Length: 128
Image (cartoon, rainbow, N blue to C red):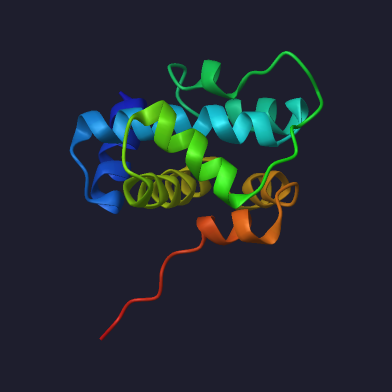
């Protein structure tokens, strides 16, 4: 049940249908797992619904080195969405993940990312 709520929250935050939210969540978590250490990914996995845990498990401790554009390209390709939808989806997934895993755990994982990727986890300012 918890994973369904996660997808619902991603759908609402990204303004996409539930099926797209599921694809974006899976693509974002897989890509995030490639970019952070295996230990940090496993720590995040401990806090998410059982159905999402396999997306955060990796076979190596070493993270890959890639930046913002490559992160979004991988998510867009995996989720089969346009780049702007991928960016909105990544933001929504990271913001939802932050609330699920808690601030301290989330910040530890994000500390392994460059500033431009960390910025994707920040909510966009609201315009008047």
